[in-house]
Image (cartoon, rainbow, N blue to C red; front, top):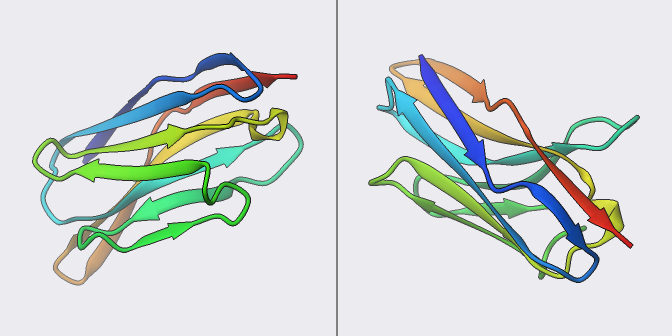
Length: 119
């Protein structure tokens, strides 16, 4: 089992910045992709940014150029630097981790952290 603890959400004005952090603990071997999804009220959960253990990234077009994902494999942590925030970025942001053990893949979700961007 992997436990994920997120931090860094909050209320910010449009144009501001926030940095989200997610730390994994527990059975943290075989960690592959780590990243972030978000879910706004009344909308489906969507990918924000994900990074593999090898450093490859997948970043949503809506945040490209404004958000930067990074990870620290030694700390089993992933970060999301969010700049030039817009009201449409308001959502609950979830940390997401994929773990590969032998031929089985497991995925884990954090509890979510609220990001609210005021206009």
